[in-house]
Image (cartoon, rainbow, N blue to C red):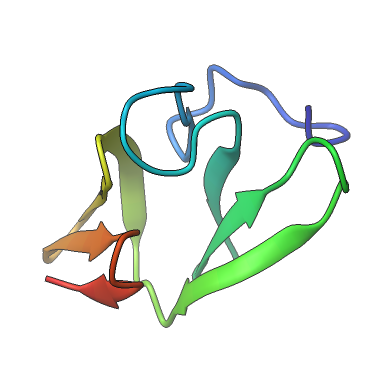
Length: 83
């Protein structure tokens, strides 16, 4: 768990082991940046920056969806790029 975080926060989602990509990691948006948190190394890895007005984050297989006030961003973990 990320120190001081709330797993029920709308800007945090969990990667499920076996669902495609990022299993066992936590994904979160903080300060306009998408991070992956590795619970083993305790390292936060920067995935995407300049995310404006994020409201909610979710993950299905290799796609992280970030719902913002003005847009929806789909980040593909398998290619490490925005779809």
